[in-house]
Image (cartoon, rainbow, N blue to C red):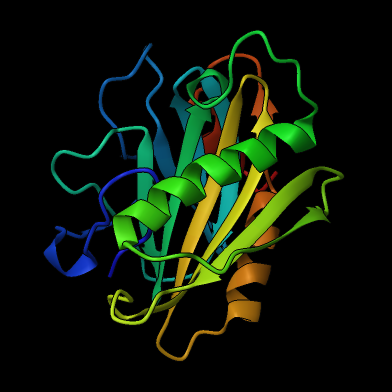
Length: 220
């Protein structure tokens, strides 16, 4: 069941799933003493992200949350299965797809990133993609670029649609990617990504997961 982004599609069936628990470390190769961590909350999980020079927390609702990192994948790509949904979270430095001399707006950055990812996905799938995109406001006051495409015939891997939600986080782009499959709907999956991204809280310093966990336990 592939989620398409700038890497070879992965298959959930081949990945070793690990049930997420409080303070479960998701990624290796940390830049400092604070790991990237998944914490349990009253209605789901909170990701404490300390990778790639990007520091934030992000909440995702749901039960039966599992994480997986297939061998050979970048530790900067964090993958979940929340119920029946496969979700990927990833950050990419803006310099990876834009010339350093350019000074684009946030919207232009997100559009350039979409084109960069879409070009890769089209080549990986060997098909022209029917992409739709629009900017959306988030509940936290931020803005994101939402884009999607139906999986080409014969290349679905069990997925009907690929959904992407991206926003600028300092010098990087944060991506949430979800594959729609089974009895899930594009509308429901899209709303799930929007609600999740609306919980984004950025930091200019690495975040201590233990301090966040203490706050969660105190119900603050």
